[in-house]
Image (cartoon, rainbow, N blue to C red; front, side, top):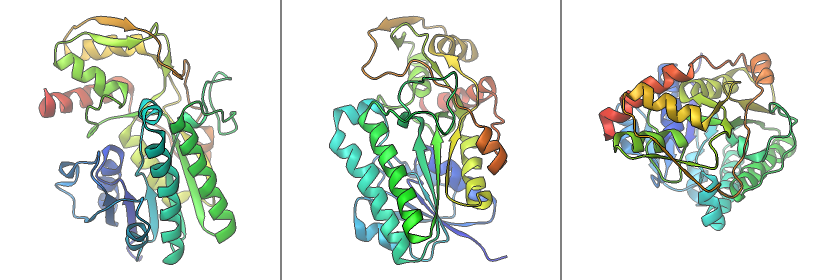
Length: 310
């Protein structure tokens, strides 16, 4: 069988680098396009990949990166609710215009499949006990709006130009290569506090819930979307469970063996209170099921974090 060649935009980032590792293990050739604004070359230090340092917001760079590619895994993005509130122009330019540039590059080089990293932020506040693909899409942050707009753009291009567009809606991802960022995911933020021996700050009462899914499961879901998805579609990707932020903070302190305590701060604007994925569609159509249990994943992550940053 002919070797597949993938373009991974944002491939030096947290999720992208885990996907790159998996694709290489599967025997694929991989090209990475990353501007290294948040990606890290250390994430690719053992990887035999072609690296293009450039920005998806540059149409010519995006076009050039698509040459000779079979599948695009589009992960490059401006990520985070608070970051988007602070800088909505950067958020929308990267997430929507950058996506259009990739789509146009695909058309120029006859690339027929794109796997897009979307987000549960497109839904806004949960109105049912768990979120399936038909849940109302009431994005309540610029980030959620830009990710939803990019999804819709991909689906429109798929319809007009006869390409396959698979949009994967991630819930809260954590795992190896996830570095601390004040705008980032709660798990590395808590890890940073724990190993700095500082109290963990929780916004609101801490009873808000999140569905945490390990990055290894997400990388596998991307591979399955590239190899098993029959046509264009959208899929929710999470663990199918949820945990409160209070319980998460206690679990991480217990696993690390470091007790720093908790302090509470006012609720942040547009902070979703409940979040849990329903993954039935991905299970049926992609054969996807999250396999990494949260406690096991946290043990691995905290070990990695302590070795690299503590």
